[in-house]
Length: 61
Image (cartoon, helix red, strand yellow):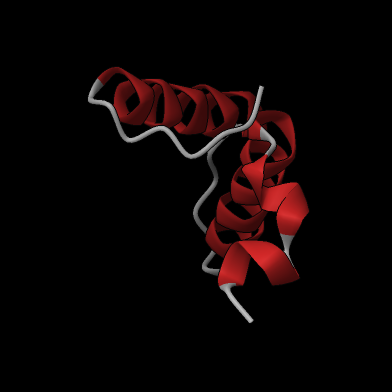
């Protein structure tokens, strides 16, 4: 079974973005790094947008 077959919801940009932002924010909080969640969300959105512009499309419409 392929990764996207097992976890098809990760192909949705909104879901992936939320999971990444939550994971990064919680990991940083556990390491006592105080970064606002809004900043983490903006960084994740920027990285995903950059990947899309470079042609690394892995999202469904």
